[in-house]
Image (cartoon, rainbow, N blue to C red; front, side, top):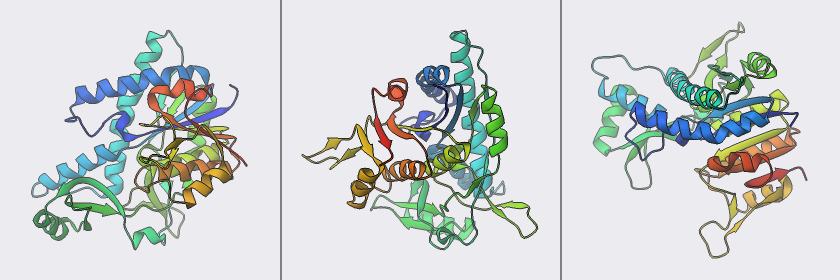
Length: 314
């Protein structure tokens, strides 16, 4: 391969929801992700890796809830920054260890990444992205009063904190990320969708409470870097239509036009495959050659065209 590659992995690559969340557990899971990613790094002269932060940022918020009477809570964009640093550390160490074992001279760097959003984005008037655990109605009322959290009931399972999820507009650390990648360094960047920032009238930036969608930021980053391929790694082997029904069919190679038509028909849920499909379509529309959606464990095979769903122009 002689092209730049962006790989997006989910938050479950370091912190699946079925673990307690100890450091040892997270290190072990990050190590598994690193073993899947090592051959991809070795095959890619220039690679940037992004990651989700869903379970981690939720636990950061939960710690704030329990410590609220003793420690002032952090603004949400700062929580995202904390999750970037923690997850980035685990992934960087896991990848470095794997590369050393393979006697590779490739190095890994983690960049705390800010993403510009617009203050007038409709998401700020209509927060819809749930993060963190479920609470009782009484707890939700207390959180609303004490921390100002906007709480909504989620499918009868309890109440959750919902936050704005504005559209990413620009990657502020783009030049630094590109420079490191061009030197052959595997770069971890834009964790959790990036730290949301708004531009002030004087040209400076301010953090704003929000969470940006990781897949949409990954597509934007891949486009701005001029990457040829965007690979989104998740917990399913391929995108499917009629999911969970007798007519379920996995998609191996699909054009952007075909995938957009399937999306318009309602095949991809907003809380699962929908953002990944939208990110793939955004990337192809911006001139990308190929978008891949595949299982993390099959990353190398997916890059080689032997696994996953491959989206191309057309």
